[in-house]
Image 1 (spheres, rainbow over the protein chains, first blue to last red):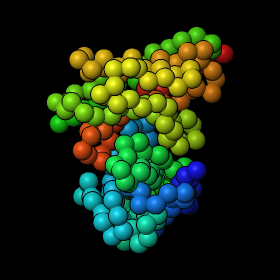
Image 2 (cartoon, rainbow over the protein chains, first blue to last red):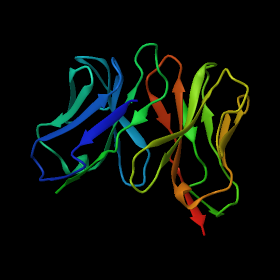
Image 3 (spheres, chains in turn red, orange):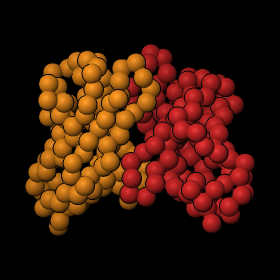
Image 4 (tube, chains in turn orange, red):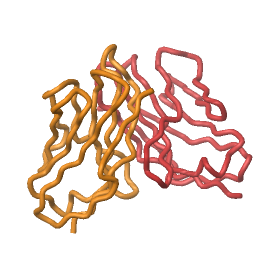
Length: 114
Length: 114
């Protein structure tokens, strides 16, 4: 069966510091991968999605970036964090081929920027 | 643009009773997918049920069932025999057949009274 991991689970960072959040998927190949952010009490905002290694689509312009160095690894980064980057970050995957409609989520990372 | 509306910010139900959560959406597409996700206090997003628009039969997963009214663009979730573990935020989501992006509702907080 497929599993999705995220780490760290919790992170407290000062403003202006760099960020790296990692997401890995096991038990499948060629998944579509997604990064979402959720502010407290709100719905999900899609940040990035990827349909293959090195292929990243950005949905929201911001100081965050994403990379996919391996088939089942998705990384969310920032060079300098802002206070507004605080939130809950969720990684998700869906089957790539044939086109999969259902997204499955990881446990999330709670980021606090001080 | 597609939109998803959940008009009930909060619902409460007595344990063992039945509750229905509402969701409406706006689209001009004929082929699409609809989902209900549950987000408990742990904040991990868990798939509850999915519905393909081309299927007239309503999806069912154990105590969870949907009432899909395509013409009315309505997709409500019925939870039967409510249990304390059902307490969570419930999100309705829409995915166009040819697009990777999920469009999310704002969520409904479900409270289970013992």
